[in-house]
Image (cartoon, rainbow, N blue to C red; front, side, top):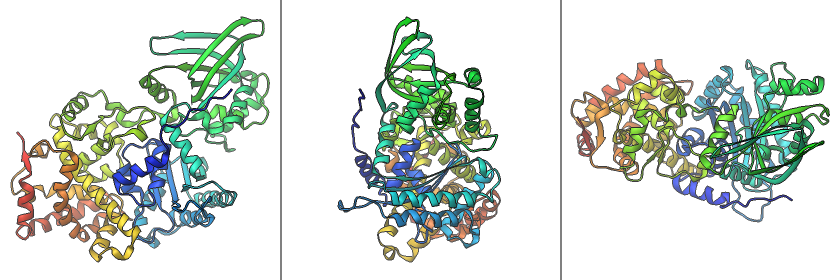
Length: 591
């Protein structure tokens, strides 16, 4: 019989923690769904970049692009406070039609300031083939409903129509989904453990080979396509709980691999075994019976397909699988979480090695991890990623690798790469060696990371204040929020502060990598030191408007604008002498 594991903690507790740690508005429920579904590490940076902020967001509460995962997400968020409500209002799902139209089809110049950069980023990623899946979500904390389902079907049609103007749009998968209480619970369960289908499953196989190691054991065998199809019919996407994307569906274009799998299954089932790459699945346990004339009885407990989701989904969508169709498969079990994590990572082609993984064994990263062990309230993984559960277990003291790379890159003169190429900082040898040098110390990382953290926290605080009561924001705060809503603004501020650092500190700085705060301060304490400096730059932010083109920073625009801004800061040093002097007392230049 089926055995169902119970979740250790309800997702609502994770949401409350997220809100508390980051002081997030209603959109926090959408961010939690993002974090759990896609195992995102630095949710604060994601929040600062994805929450649209400001007043006129054109029904786009969240707009998120991840070029490494090749996804784009547009979300409407709703969190019911009253327990009397059972279903979310369908009109907010319908609003996503307007959101998609504004985001994908309106003239950029007709969009609100806070949406221009996001729309341009989204469209550019589609045109360059850097988005393969678009998720349009209505995220809420209630039950799913038929009314919302019907509205989202229309949203999917609206999106497909809007994409016709983009090249290669036929290769993009669209998922218009209602993410309610049940769905978030499933995301949470998937993030908490790799295998959520825990039933005992049995089948007969023609033969099998068992291979064992100290840390794992595996059965390599062949299963019928009909058996796989029946699993998909019963468990649907839960069958791919360790897989970020699951089954992507089939389109009729020849280039679509899933349509190709179905074609082979229907027209050449006898050769399917040799044409298909096969399946790798995690199991909690397995047992092999005695060999008989009918084959071997195989019993498995629990299953999560980590490689072969497209094969399984394609067979499951056939309706009737030819009896001759056989699929190569290996079932793997391991008691060690680190092994399970690596099985998922290395076997799933959709979950290819993330950029930071390539540097996790680099000597500089090893040294930084050792140095961070001595810094209070700071945890640095240096490119190492944990298991699936890290999305919900991650400490609030963590300094995520990507964000560290972005903050160093921006501080050392390249805000556009920091904003637009966070993966390449780790994969491109030139970029990587420019920011992670022998002089890059953990305390210097704290120095620059805490600056970006202060800026992102400022934007989230202003966004939250605006959401609660727009009239409570002063004109100055509204101006700051408008600026911070522009794509890449945070990294631009880091850049201009770094370029003004000699003026701020009142001394020559031969090598900025030697900068750090006095004493062994935590990143949170360090962020407070930066507050008056960030205040000053924000007060002058209108002088930086020229650094943006179509709502986001570009190299050409930054190069034209920043030198003049540095001159403005220099001209104001007498007025801000005390502010600069107080900050300088906290900073030291190591030799």
